[in-house]
Amino acid sequence: MFIFKHIGLIYFKRKVYIGDKMVFIDNLGLMLFILPLVSVLIAYTTIQAFIGFRKSSYEAIKRSLDDSILPAAILGIIIIILSLWGEFTWTLPGSYNILFYDVYLLLGITILSYSIAVYMGKRLQSTGIFSLFVGLITIYYGVSGYNLGLTKEPLALLALYATYGIAGILGYPVTLALDKLRDQQGVKDPKLEGWMYAFFLLFWIFVVIAGIIGAFIAVETIPAHLAHPP
Image (cartoon, rainbow, N blue to C red; front, side, top):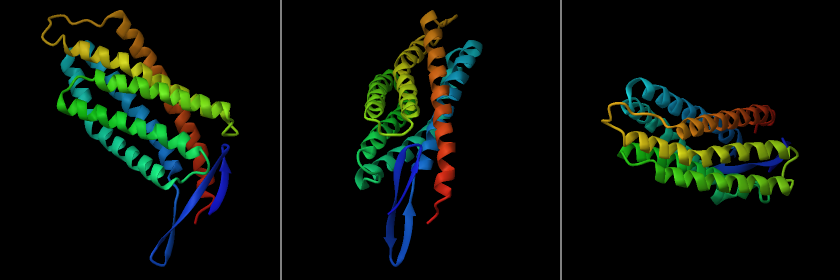
């Protein structure tokens, strides 16, 4: 195995033999870059839906959510595949596998659940309550990793897990708001209540911050990976 350090992580590039050829499997960079992609999709979809609602009622929200089904499903499936592969093959040393793949799998399930709910025309709050608990779990993992000093950049670890965790928690009231707006279909003058504005704004703030942190860590990670080709 080839071992190298980056942002405090010790990452193993696993050797896999296919016939008489050896290939290396290193998915960490891809996994990290998927996180900001998730943030971009969520922020773009919800902001577009919010602005559209103010112009043309719930139909604009439905169009925005429908447009997000395919990319959300693709991202969710990819995340689940990468997570299950990591969980089954134990690609990282020590407890890092638990730290990263557990919450990554829960993220994939949440995103896929959202896309299925939108596709089937179901209420979103069931996915939202799942998102809330996944957010709490993510924060717990991040705090535990920070307290155990699992990386040389514990604040970066904590910030990544905390921001995505808080965004997940805020996802629940956001889905409640979207369901409530859907229930106003046919109402002559549907309105956004004050609490909806507050939760939408907080949700966007943490989704964007989480995406920026994830992108920064991914950008910092890639050169170290490319510097050690097979």
